Length: 310
Image 1 (cartoon, one colour):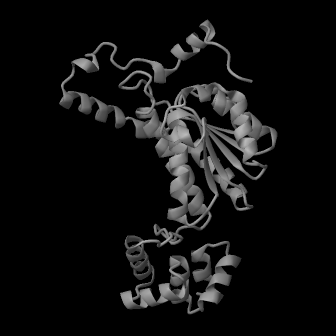
Image 2 (cartoon, rainbow, N blue to C red):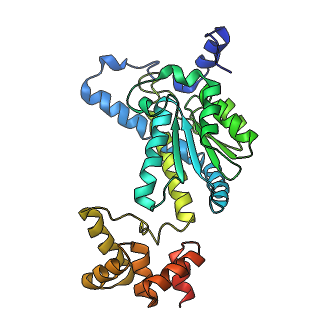
Image 3 (tube, rainbow, N blue to C red):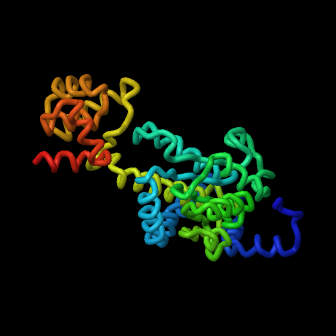
């Protein structure tokens, strides 16, 4: 399943990608611009990315809903990509545990392995079989959601991973920055964000990278919210592992309950500095053990516990 040598058909497909087109046609070349004009052009280009993402919101929402259903049953959200796309997936996955207090629920996989995070491994993206093998090593199952990320929408490594995921019954999502892509067609939910040409032609770490980060933010955050990992806008499952985060935990408890700082600190101490549990004890009058049991019955949703207690 390894990709073969580049041929004329490959070149034609590459030329058809809007992310490979030049944005300077009919205008000044960027190497002729002043620094001020260059960064202004980049800023203007970035301002169009949010509108491109907005065009895909219905598909993103459908993907979040479907993924959440599986995650409630123990499934994972698994990002798979190469190059910038892979790095952005690993970045988003790595930020979920400290923010939402979960381990190994959102996973990032990059072509070439961890070394590719800091050193380019461009050749790894051409190996379709490697994508399938890397997912097999994670023991991906039917409850998992696999998000293939490729700005071009045609990266062999990502397509191989998505094909493996589909074969074992996982939910598949394809995130691309071109329209009508093989990745979009192969996925149960094809999220295609047409960002257009880059300021530096073909450098998809720019507009496409920004769009990708925005969509990944939505996928991980929205699924975690649906799973009860927030209360209002508060990250109540955050891990208070340092002084800054402990101060934040106190602030969240006082904001959610109206309690004084001293009361919040005492409740957090008794709850092992688990913010959600401390809020639950203050608002319900339950002991930490009772509140923990109530939260477990409610699937971790703090609002449900509070409403049940009136």
